[in-house]
Image 1: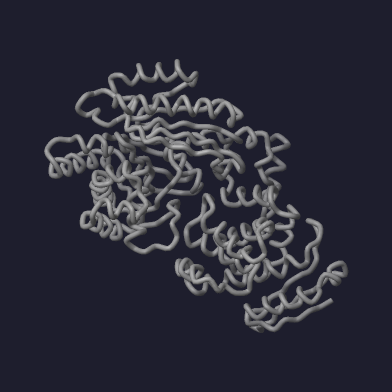
Image 2: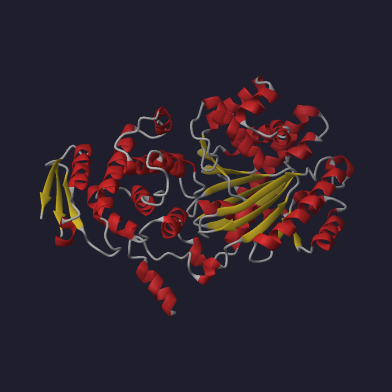
Length: 513
């Protein structure tokens, strides 16, 4: 076994392990550019930063509708080809300035099925100098599933990726992609199908039955990937009055999907589009996508449904990762990177974690990882104005582009970081979002925030042991034992924050020197 592997395994016994973003294998993924030439849109994404959790250095999409009308003509949409060519020329030029390596470009259903798809690929390559790969449906399904694994490393369930001209299904379990199937259930194709709504339903059901026979029973989580699904999720949020407008990891129940599809039929499309914040081009495909989603839920009967903002583009990033990086927690890696980049004393997050953990001895593993994240992020917003620092922390946690975070976990982390800088939360919008977690979790987040607020007062070098906490919940005693070096740090403000922490725990504060 090589030395690097051995040291990495030893580091894993430490609660924080060893950050991988500075390793050559991770740095090689910085400024990685990918282009997805789809049936409806052409998009460039350039990733940067913490390689395990995708940071979007640049993201641009052009709605080209290459697949519009293909069912009738067999050829790519002429206007769409002009727009796609213009977009690809722009993307090639941008990549020369932004990327550290070449773009990886893939084309999906429209170009692989059109009679002039190969001809257009050659034209794009000749006029842009880029290499373009036309992938088949099974490869598209695999890459989309890998994109989901980028955000949910241990996820299991069924991936459903809808594009303009196709829809793919893939199963994932244990960090691996399993069986995959591809179909023509894309909204652009369904819109051109003759026979109206009745014929579409029959075609969708027949196709899904065949796909289901290939995949077998799939009653776990259903992960929805693709712009049409995200548009439906926006409409679901609007119908429910959901307060956190973050699509990634948004959850729906089968019953909620049925209610939203009925709501969609009852509303004026333009009014609903504006209220939900959906583009006109995307909204035009929602009715057909809704018909597909209804039948997908009916056929597979998932336990619940999760929206994934990660798909084929993130799957291409995941493809380039070494396994050691794939196995890491995307949330913790991103927080490590942010602490190294933005904290005043990088490394103190680990000291703080060790200091406050006696308060959370019975915490479940899923809560412990949020405590780790909060410790790493506790000081990264110090540049914000003091009057707005608490608000800024809350917004950063709840709205940041972070993988591996459920919405309830976003809110918990946001409240903890808010209380890192404030004992109270007076803004009504905090309570509106806070209702996404129960009262007990809100109280635990406040305790964590106050622990961070107090622990930050004992700020020393990164490997110091400034003090020890001991919490006795049955006796309701919170004890603080100060080291000789830390005694001078326990001034008036620190004392007040220690009392505030004890108050949040409903405990008596005891100080030992």
